[in-house]
Image (cartoon, rainbow, N blue to C red; front, side):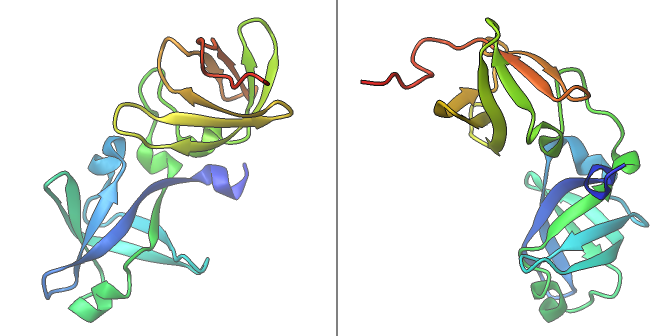
Length: 175
């Protein structure tokens, strides 16, 4: 198993909260229940430095989490965590529901139309208010696919393939 496959990106520290070392954490909705006292997480800074943190306390607050990590007892210590990405061990997370995938499992898979045409590889996932948008890049350029049942017909992470139905207007036609 690749090291990336062992870890799931779960969220990011937004900013400190209060004066006792707590931070506000943006967490992917499916993963909020994984954050509880005693859980060890992997933290990755924007510069690529990595460390482990132990959750001492976590509670929900306005659609986010307020978390205090062991050894982070002051506002300045909490401020030093601003912007870090938080990762959980995949086994802690468990399986997602039907037709739900972890973004990192989708990146790099081949995207084909329902007629068999290879559009390219899924390179990026954009989180938009209505639905995610999959950015596919290939020889024909870039295509933005809304992650809806009407467009995304099948995803097979194990084989690294996605089958899509191209609605009118999704592909830029050459002029």
